Length: 112
Image (cartoon, rainbow, N blue to C red; front, top):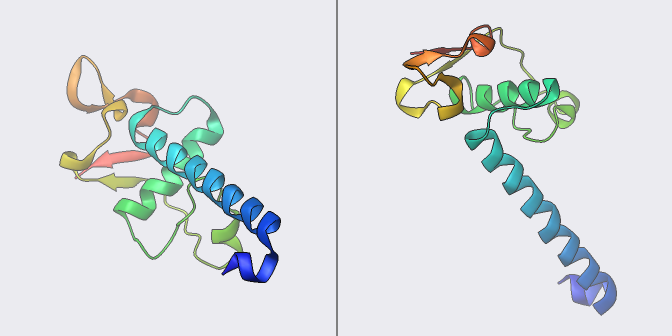
């Protein structure tokens, strides 16, 4: 459809930019689940994202930003995100004490 509307060059540019942007989103989403946050902003975005998964799926849809949740009224702030033990991310735990949340994440997360 974009080929008909935009012509072949713009349609190709649109399609490639869509694919690249979506791939970036998927990489970010994977990293949130598999790699511990390395920056303060990474911690904020993970808490935002995991509140979507584990608190209320109707809110906090953003993975790479909170902007659009704020614009569209789907932003909710949570003091602590409750995560089922069976679904918790490996990076959340203290390596020496299984199922004990690492000290730096205890303010943001707790297990159910």
